[in-house]
Length: 423
Ligand SMILES: *Cc1c(COP(=O)(O)O)cnc(C)c1O
Image 1 (cartoon, rainbow, N blue to C red):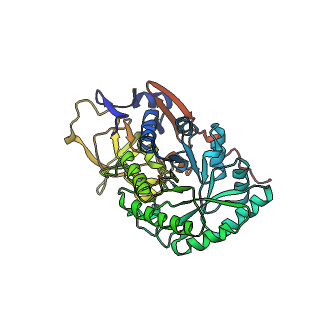
Image 2: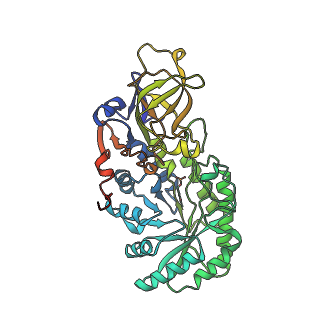
Image 3: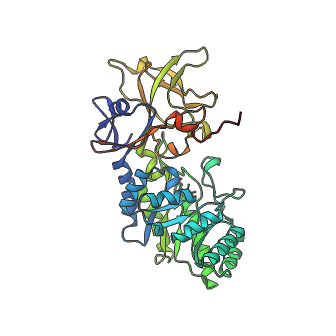
């Protein structure tokens, strides 16, 4: 638990607001974010960047609620986007699109046009066909597109295979041996301006060493390009820094960012701008998913604690077998740990994969509230309407204030755009 999610008289609170009060007011399941926690995580990066040519591009796919974006925009963040839709979110909060980098392997022509119209900082390009498409679109609209190539440095980030992106055989990035020829091809295209290089080796990385390994390879490329007269003004080191879900011990944000910036300076590249693209480490531990126990179902092999949140609300356990701590919001009066029973905490969705936690010792009764911790990243944004379940409400706590930042969906909205066949 962090300083922003803590117990007051035994009851779990976010900043100055008891979670039980939020459940009463907004119902469950509900995502609850802490503005102070978002701010603290951003400031931890900003502290390392001070005195360097370095900046933070929040990778908004981790949590793209407009209020979350607004907090980061006000703190001075740029954004890393992966779709035209995410660019529209930048515009919707009044943030500066010229501080946006556009990542992703499959940008459409329409997305490229939109991004060019708003003068984004840079396109992170991942293939020659994408360079050709961007060159054609930029030519058509009479602009030069700023381009950075995402290289695949072939390093092992030692994380889950589904969230590892920097190894050979992965769909992301330009294979290391093809990097120089691809830069040369880009340099020959008239409507592109080469400005940078980037890599992103994976997610939930808990060691610095894979980053340093990748950074050294990136800097080797920068130097080789310079010898050919291709000068890069920025180096984007990607995102991926891990957080503590259970007992992981990732490097602290400021120390991590300083280590990379120092390596850049040591190798004589301090004059180039360094971009960080964090997602999870800015938001993951700034949010919880609040849920209520519906039933307890004892069984011969397993006991089940059935709650009102499910895999459609939080997909990470079903998708990656991810671990989230699950905490009782208000421990029952007079309970002691000896009374805890081991449960699988599961949702109401009709899938065996619908679970939020396995083998958890909990002293709970039907009607009790539970908090699924560390749910601020890849939580709500990956939620779906599977089983015609309206998506959860989202709430932002700021000191003693509680703001509803996304209303709970209503069932009638879920099939509003569906049509019956003619009779
Ligand atoms: C997802 C992503 C990030 C953010 O990753 P986190 O693990 O959430 O920090 C950064 N850059 C790119 C290109 C991404 O796809």
